[in-house]
Amino acid sequence: MARQTPLRAIRGMHDLLPDDSARWQQLEDRARTVLEGYGYKEMRTPLVEQSELFKRSIGEVTDIVEKEMYSFEDRGGDQLSLRPEGTASCVRAAIEHGLLDQPRRIWYRGPMFRRERPQRGRYRQFHQIGVEVFGLTGPDIDLEVILLTRRLWDALGLTDLRLEINSLGDSAERAVYREQLVSYLRPHEDRLDDDSRRRLDSNPLRVLDSKNPDLAELIAEAPSLTDALGSESREHFEALCSGLEQAGVAYQVNPRLVRGLDYYNRTVFEWITDALGAQGTVCAGGRYDGLVEQLGGKATPAVGFALGLERLLELSQTEPPPSVDAYLIAVGEQASAAAMAIAEQIRDALPQLRLVCHCGGGSFKSQFKRADRSGAKVALVLGDDELAQQRIGIKPLRVSAAEDPHAKTEQTSVAIDALADRLPDFL
Ligand code: ATP
Ligand code: MG
Image (cartoon, rainbow, N blue to C red):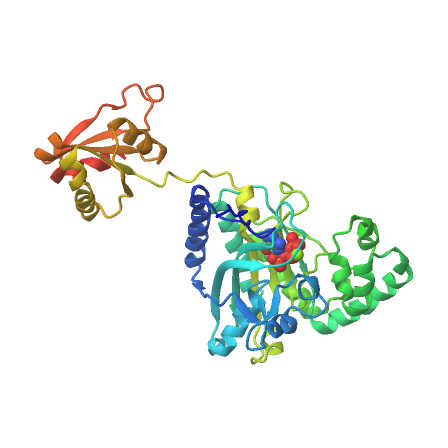
């Protein structure tokens, strides 16, 4: 048969290769530890939802719903979409399962799908960790979610992120501001790009969110949302600001900061870096008190954020520790035959040990080569002689004499029974 042309992954969607997974796991583990440290519980929802859910939550007039969703009709005729973000599904699930009876601190992680133009830091399948808190009006909880993100940056060794915050007010205040903004923008309509011109009627606040550099000046001169805030929104925002100051979190108020998604009100925030070019926002969040009711639940205040794992990974420099501790080499007829059983014995005695057992035979030399390539810290060496005496060799693979002239690089022979006691000294 003629050899087939191999297929490739879809543009903007990436394989996570075995050698790269340790970095992802390390990031996910650290995030999980921080989240659990604040009492957040994980929730997992399906990757596919009814398209209607995203239309009703994110809004019909948004980039995501207008042009980025992977939507399809399934064989039963249902209109479905791959989730482009996590909040809508969390709210849907919270309503469906009656979770809104008391305050809830929830987190989620997983892939999201948006058909954007792929570029550095922007993919069609990307991964988020997010948090949603239901039933608390803030500003204390707004402060908590921001402090939680700061702790996460510390845990990941990230130092050059800056925090921008703003208040979007409530819907009545935004309606007033919306009119001011439209009156300001209307005379400049010819300077707007197509997207912004369309939004001028449908969703004018989103013009402020435009990434088109040609509009930067126009946007900078626009009236400020902050001036349109009423006293309650102002107090909420001031309490958040003073909480941040007390906790020693530096922040910048950015009155042009609006979120791309329509359901936000009051507090919005972003963590931004200059190290990733145009895709500088690594984490974005805020309050969305109207969404639960909009999706058919009882009115419930809510606040949350989502962060992009690909962008965080690109920023973080930490090298994960090696993922293999030991590699068992066996040469000789009896030794090879016994190797798997002995490996099991070792795993029973040392449940934490990450042990690779050589397969496929070969000489000492070729097996040592594999052991070295595996990244293991030590080789465990079994020959027929060792086996006859119920002993095994421990040979360090990673200590260079230059680093540590007294390092033991010789092979040490120990009784198999004593391995559990002796091996940890070599790891
Ligand atoms: P951006 O302004 O970068 O398009 P956004 O406002 O669309 O982001 P959100 O929907 O709030 O972003 O998602 C939160 C975070 O998820 C972003 O700050 C970013 O880190 C990440 N993210 C969003 N879209 C993508 C993507 N296409 N590829 C990689 N990461 C993404
Ligand atoms: Mg976007």
